[in-house]
Length: 255
Image (cartoon, rainbow, N blue to C red; front, top):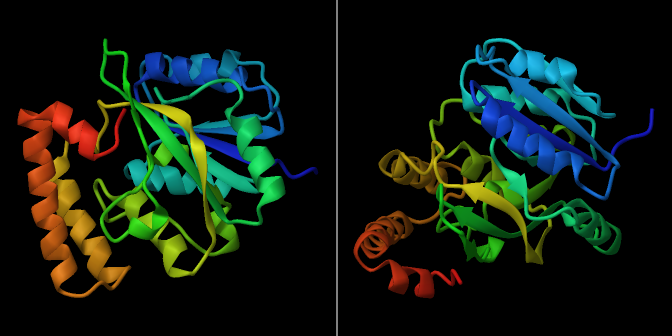
C-alpha cells in the first residue's frame, strides 16, 4: 500500500453543517495524495448518513462514542497512515485549494518534522483577520500558530499522543512534546487555514490559561518566573482584545 503524504483528521460531534463545510474544502484540494480520516462521536444529527453517501477516494471514518475531544483525536492518529497529519475539525477549512500542494513542496525542500503557517480567524458573519503565526521558538509563551495550520510528522513515529486529561490546551501540550524531543520546525509564510472562533478553546480562555501554565511547567520545564510573566501577559492581552481590539491586533501582528 502506498503511504499517503497527508492524513487530514477531522473529529466531529453533532455538527453536520460544519462537517459539510470541511468536506467541501477537503475535496477541492488540488494535491490528491491524502487520506481523510473522520472520527465522529456517535452523532445523532445525520452525520452518519452523510458519511455513508460520500464517494471519495481515501475517506475512512468511524462513528462511536468517545471520551472527549482529545480521545477522539488520538483515535484519528491511530487510524492515520500519512507521513504528515493535520487536524481539520468539523467547520474548519483550508485557506484555499492550493494549501496541501504548498505544504508538500515544503516537505520536499526541507527535511523538517513540523510545518506551520498563518491562519484566518473568523467569527460568524465577519470577513476575518489574518493571524500571523509567531516563531515556534516562542512556545514558552503559548500556542504560536493555529492548530489547523500545523502539519506534524506522524506522531506514531515518535510515540506522541494527546494528553486526554486536558480540557482545552491539549493541542499546545501535543505541540510542545514535539519541541521537547528537539524535532525540527519550519514556518511557511502563508495562510494555511480558516479557523472559526466558536470552538472550545475560544470559549474557555480561563481554563486555557491555567492549562497553558501547566504545559510550561511540566513539559517545557521553564523557570519559575516565566509562568508569572505569561499569566500577566494573558490578562493584559484579554483586556486589550476586549477594550482596545484595534491596538491588540496591531501589537499581535494581526492584519
